[in-house]
Length: 65
Image (cartoon, rainbow, N blue to C red; front, top):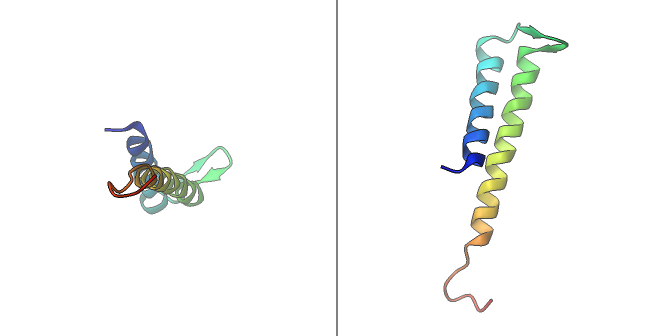
């Protein structure tokens, strides 16, 4: 398993736990829900970037490039 999949999935899961299960938790100056939403967005960006680069790197066998 690639580390980008692991990092992205972990960030999404941790963000979902913060946003949905403990939204009132205060960590330094963050509260749970906004921090969770931020972690979900970063994790989704990581996974999206990985899928995008994976898709772009594979070319069709009849592609003349």
